[in-house]
Length: 319
Image (cartoon, rainbow, N blue to C red):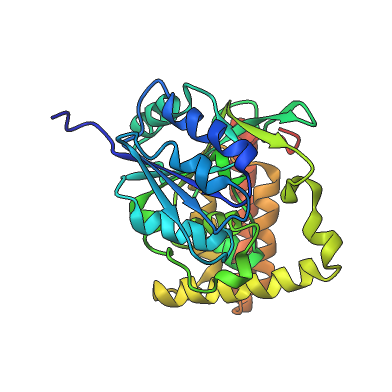
């Protein structure tokens, strides 16, 4: 047995995507390196999704879960996680597709950067719109983001199908009980949750996921905004509820000497951007309660900024 082998799980969530789901499952099955298990969770679809998914049930590494009640995307994440046994979990929406070499490339990344807990990659849009979406032109070590997520609510990640997370990280926040809050956009729970429990995040610039653009794509078309003009306001309170649950589950609270902890967190990013400094400046200014440490923290932050600027390790804000 190869002790260096990392066991992998692919979690595919589906609701009424019978026309797309077979392509998604096929893309997981035809990877250049085989997934140890592919778990397809159908969220009580009303179309013929169950019939399409059942055709794949004979594959030795495919497990199908057919829910009796529709409860939304987060519920499907919960079900998939509870059924998974992999060391790294990969997420795939039923209307998206993996490139054949995605898993092999991602696993090589995890092996090369053993400290990586959470990886997301660039992606290609296809269908009603074409193009490549990249947050950076090179691979990036994004460091830790507990404090900046907790204080600023920063969302450091990407769409569901580009995400993979180590089990030891995801088990700290999944399953999440408040499923009704996250019937859609449950990737928020994965992105925020991983940050809050201390995941070291990385970005892979290779666009190895294909993100389908179509008329029923809620995230791209912002359909939830059309249905509810107060969506973002409500999302803020849902986020607070989510944060409270994860923090209580992990017995975590805002640290003392926040100014110094913020600077320590910033230093986990090898080549920070100017926007990273602005983020931590905002945290120190707004959330450090001790006036003396607030001023000292800001001074130390500027000194660190100048040090990186002079050494050439500071990335331009446009990069």
